[in-house]
Length: 511
Image (cartoon, rainbow, N blue to C red):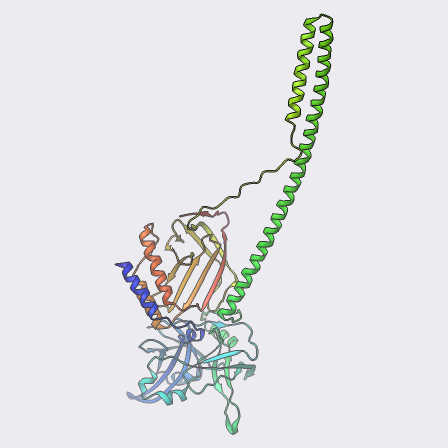
């Protein structure tokens, strides 16, 4: 019954393909609308809204001026947060505010949002950037009632380029050309990997045909504000590469390693060949010397034997038959020995026997076992949101990893475990090659619809610990292949780790 369910799930996933992985769409999941509602005697007397972005599952950054009314009139102004996905909006609480930097931090307690990462590396003039938020002019064109302002919907994106960085009233600002309007305030300016580079805060006036420009509070000002507020955040300093660029770089790194390995093997083969030739020469010299010594000894035996035979003949003529027989017998033995030595002389050209190469047994490669320490390979990874600390991995018999998580062999030959969480909107595919030399983590930052689909497929098999049951492992493998078919063709993030046996540990091959 379980396998039948998984077959239907896989078929459903094929007929309803997942949306393409898109870093900007992934960042959009973290964007929220910030709403302020002023109440006097139970009646709404004022309404305002802006944008914000989650930097932790429960904390959101926005502009100070977006929540200004809630600061001035805390007893009369309600603060609301409207996520970009889902069906509900939530009450917000002001945690910190910095009017000089025009930044504020809001907390929600009834929901958890996907947290965005802040880009802390250098930004070049002309770099492609995207503004995300809820521009008021779009709302005016689409909203039909007040409910439309508190209904979750996808933020509007606007693309442009970074002009430069300037200081405005002592605050570092990014000047850019992405089109924003009132309502974008507090929303993020992100790079092509979906990482926060700044927080949009203002626009220039476009009077008399002037071209409009936008201002965003620079990322370094944002990180200082969060540090002052004792708020943890994720930061990434590596340059943004598309997955195609990352794959090309990965292939180049693998090709370089392959060439280096081939050169090392060629050098090893050349050294082995030279060693063999030297051994062959020494063996030939030894064989020739032995042959010459054997022939010389045979000659000596033959001469002595001939002399003994002559002495025997002489004794025979003298009628000394006893001495004649002794001398003649000795001569015959010596001459026979000479013949044997000559016939059994070594060949002049000795051969060195080739060592038989070990041929691995056919069949499915088994997963190596032992304790390993895996270190990130930045040249083979695409890092967008995650930390890259070393990862210890313990592999036991049957694909039991870290003594708690069951891995199964996928259709690509790698041992994998696909993690589909209940709350976080990210699917993680962790995989290990059979030799346990490479550990890889692919992360898919998905929309609500695709996450729901993945969770439905995951519900078919619930395996929360390692198992020795081959049937359960086979069902897990089938389920994971079904989940994979529901995921986009490419992940948003790929971390590649090089693994080596941990200090004092030895790897082995298991079942």
